[in-house]
Length: 141
Ligand code: DAT
Ligand code: MG
Image (cartoon, rainbow, N blue to C red; front, top):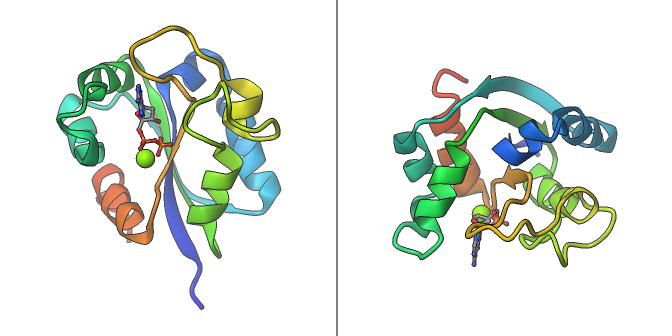
């Protein structure tokens, strides 16, 4: 079967805390392959489209504000079952209870903000991955 692709973001908290290298190191150490990589500050249109499933939820505006608060590192990562595999590396959404050994469990915590700051994003399905990769890397084949 063909390898899968997923969209990974190191969120603004991860960039500010100097954890870009640690995130990419764990992705590569697991055996996945970086096929595109870019640092940029996302505009609100891109972030609204990226998080469209959460539009209308109480944390949506704080989430977009947070994600626009500084540069992110966006990556397309490739490998068999990488969507599931990166979600496993990332750990649960809540960094307080994310399992030790995961990025969010080892490196994240609750900062008392209205939106959970949890260092990384990973696509949650093949459909999300395809949609998100198209948003962040429109030129990628
Ligand atoms: P994930 O990033 O694990 O896929 P998600 O897609 O449900 O989680 O939510 C997107 C982000 O929004 C998540 O990484 C952190 C934030 N978030 C989710 N649920 C939240 C909540 N109940 N309160 C505050 N922030 C939340
Ligand atoms: Mg999600």
